[in-house]
Amino acid sequence: MILQESASPADLLTVRIGCKFIYEVSVPTPALLDIEPHLEGVQQLLGESLSIGGGLPTESVSNSHDNHLLRLTLPPGETLIQHDALVEVLATEDLYGVEAAEFVTPDKLPADYLRYVLPSRFCESDRLASFAWQTFGHLPVGWPRAKAVSDWVHHNIEYRFGSGHFELSAWDIFQRRYGVCRDFAHLTIALCRALNIPARYVTGHLPDIGFIDPGSPMDFHAYAEIWLGGRWFALDARFNVPRIGRVKISHGRDAVDCAFFTTFGAVKLNYFEVWAYQIERGTVHVGDPIDLTKRLDGTLTMRRTLAR
Image (cartoon, rainbow, N blue to C red; front, side, top):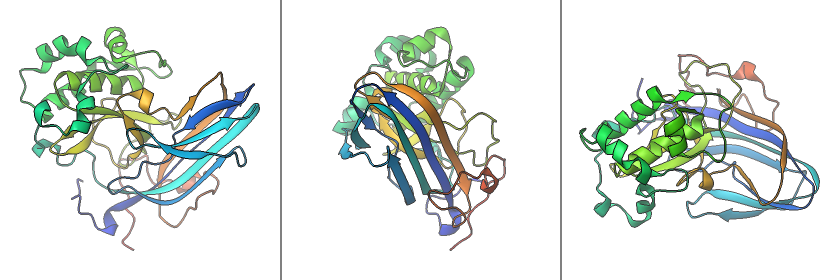
């Protein structure tokens, strides 16, 4: 069911998100951490805890996309980083209203959004422009073209778990025809930008609300957002269906702007775990052990929180 955006408390869902990982370095190594929710719109933080190496000093900074980062220095040896949060989101499918959203030509875009129609390191829209216009240029502008891009990527790129690599770009994926969610996002963005549709890269959590649990380990997720009708809409060619309950961490031109951990030196990842699932508000507290018996998602039935 698609709900109106002017949702009442009965239409709000609570999602538990978090991650735990251990990094090892041999010398002091500067780093940037980007794992906390990007609070915007109706995404509301109910509670949060973040532990970094038992109390390593950090400095809060923001980048040019208004993402919240923490700057720190990893000491020699292992460092445990753990984040846990409860976030309230609307029980609304993320493409609600997109069909009526109008396309804005580049000459009328807000100045800050022009970067989202230009090529970037991992989204070479200039190299894909000829293919994009030949394949989608006959369609009506705006959403029909963006939807066709998502459909094409979904049906022509094979999702292959574990095939990702930090050097691969949209052009690489276009040629080899398989990849992971990062690659689906980069190719979607590049094709949309080639058609003058503003598009940006997003990292975050995607619980399986109203969606069958695929059975794979929970992980961070990457997808695209397109700007139509004065707002951003999620465009996720990996699944190619509207989803509920996304929790955004970062957005930017491509994966360079949204890495959950950036180190300025050699580093080894010794442990990695991510969680994102719907819970009944008040039954779980930040820092509680991960208990999937309290999970409400993973089925085609969406269970709402009762009005408070």
